[in-house]
Amino acid sequence: MAWDEWERLKSDAVARGSAQMQLNQYPADQGGGAPAGAASEDLKSDKKAWAKAGEGQ
Image 1: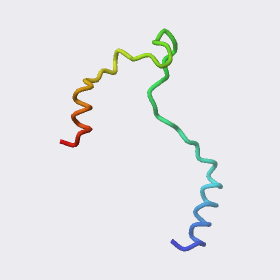
Image 2 (image 1 turned 180 degrees about the vertical axis):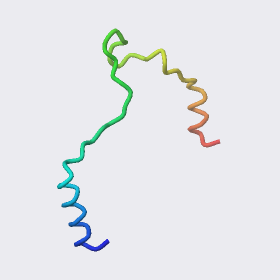
Image 3 (image 1 turned 90 degrees about the horizontal axis):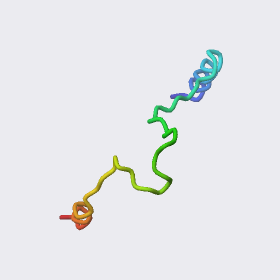
Image 4 (image 1 turned 90 degrees about the vertical axis):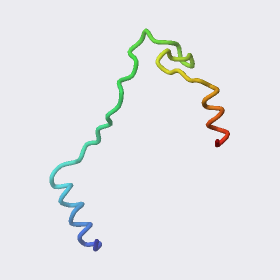
């Protein structure tokens, strides 16, 4: 893309109005959850499986 074309695209975007960013994410816990650093009941792990996976077998 030529530099003048890039500059034209930027000025066209400015003329249309500023773009807004939107982050789609899971909403934060609104309280009543486990204290910071505590294990979540939703997240469970079999440590043996992780250890075996780390061995590269």
